[in-house]
Image (tube, rainbow over all chains, first blue to last red; front, side):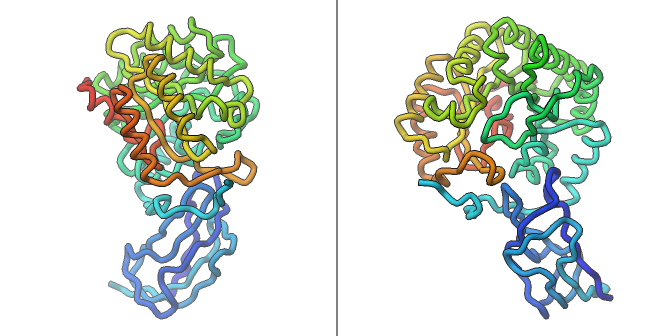
Length: 81
Length: 292
């Protein structure tokens, strides 16, 4: 099953961040808890882990671009396990 | 020697843990409480909320002062909420906090400048959680010692008031009403008049353009004022509109300052980039053997 992964709300005060870098590439196997990408908010760099097991199908954001909480970041082919 | 505030060093990398942060955030928003963790967008929020630690910001969320380093909104504040002390105390009890930091916005609009709300909050926490140690991080109360005394009489375990920076840089980063001498006076008064069992604490930020000599002079001023605990952390510029970051201070210098501060006679020093006033603050009381 394909699942759209959305940008979590990282800061209680702000919904607008900068996308940092991808830690997984299209085709990579992803396990729950693996770091998927890094995002910069005003004060920190947050490492965002995956909530699912699966394979990364699409990256919808480029490194360095602005991004808001709720935006679709990636598409994951989620496996059952 | 301006530094690029967007070019963050590796130690500013944090792991996002939605579940843990949400647990504390939900409870606090349900009880309509503010934390300085959220309002100042603190980098340690994941770790602290994850371990059930929070620094409550009473009398907020809007501040009457406009310090150029700070991310707390400078807007017209709301009237004092007399139900707030009980709600803070209930949240602390529900979270089972062993040590709590209570701070506030500046309230130059109030006749008591907010001091009485600190007293009410301390009393409410003592009633519901007698074994929780309490640290208050107060405004300068415009240097009015009678107001400082009211807070001291409520017997917090730690009376904290932040110097923020060295003398020369104070007028550049703090609101014009917040002076270096006011803050020193508050700390000195607290040392002289605190009841037995209350320790006096302060904190400074690095990376604002201060020199070693200026930092050491500030340490000397603080020792002379009778300050027990000192926290030293890295300034992180909240946005392009805020005071320009001058330097990401290397770890070695934090270590050097730690050694110098301990040699000068502070009872406890926390010196590291991510140190904030309330970050792991219970360690200082453990260091001097205080337990409730």
